[in-house]
Image 1: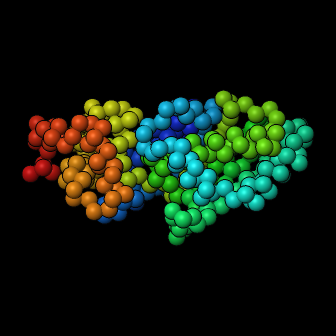
Image 2: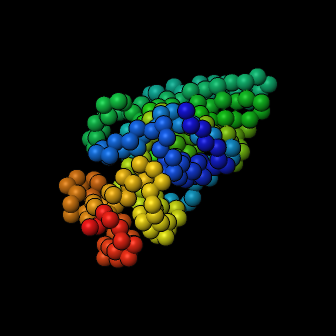
Length: 271
């Protein structure tokens, strides 16, 4: 089990991605798969709420993504059941004694996608009143930790705010909310690493990642993929994956610039 602590969920998201890049101990590395670096049972502890930027990185059309997740995961009957538990105990929920309340997600088949073989990735929200403070526990079955996890955080924050409003929850303090987020099977995609670095640290961080001596097996796999495939989107047959390479080249000024970087550092993967 890995446990990371951060002030906000956004900081935890950044920290988690950096840990995956720097440390592949205890991981499963599967170079030929898209979900190619996986860990088991990672726990994020957040002490001061979500702290998500108003302008997130442009991984998705965020509003469209949030609507998609709402359609996939919020079953009206199941949602109502969870909210009504909280509402029924509104006056006693924040009293002397601890209380805990479950609101479940339910992954439904939609026109745009079937339910994954393992079931839904987002499982539940649990609201716990303990020692005069609200705590939130989020459970995820599986998660790609770069774009999809960040979108999940925005969706969960919106879902939580909806629960608080509909259940008329008292003494809610979003800036001092403790969040424990359990990721049972988080994974990092090799082709999302450059995207993450670009919007968190900038192009210089990408250059360092791709030309410095590899720190571990995962670092080496990411480098090789970047130079042999990622900057050549025409080699990528799967459109869902190809779009990230195309977007990256558009955002950073094109392939020729990266080829110059590789050649100036005599990157062996280009020869």
